[in-house]
Image (cartoon, rainbow, N blue to C red):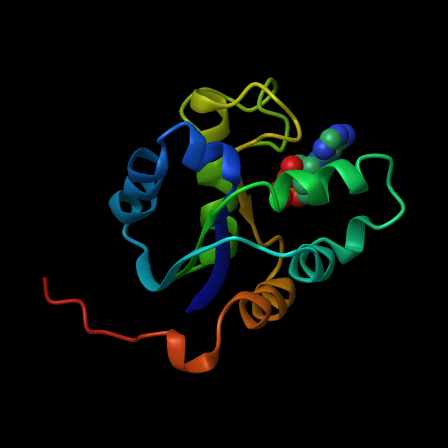
Length: 143
Ligand code: CMP
């Protein structure tokens, strides 16, 4: 069982896509164990995107992430990291295949609606940046 961090970025909130995007993770069968509406400050954005420091798009990316509220979520399930990345599609909305979240709703490479951890190791690091341990709630799925 894996956990992964998913962020709905400020463009997703501006475009009223919270429900449409979140539905895809629920429909897939993943379990939501953490959820918050949060406006990231510069310090959080810097930690979250530390790996991109020095890249030409870094400053613009930080401005974008801190420009408005985001929805931060933790999803749990079998191979959750890869499953979520498959649901999101390629980073560049113009290249993401139809049927994926970015393929269906995004055209930009920066304003691509959503972030998902790219490995189990990064997932646990990113989850700890956005959530306190007590904010993650485990609950039983009753079928
Ligand atoms: P994300 O999956 O959150 O990971 C890093 C983010 O940087 C990415 O989504 C995009 O929002 C952004 N990004 C990646 N590549 C570029 C690029 N070439 N130009 C602008 N932004 C980018």
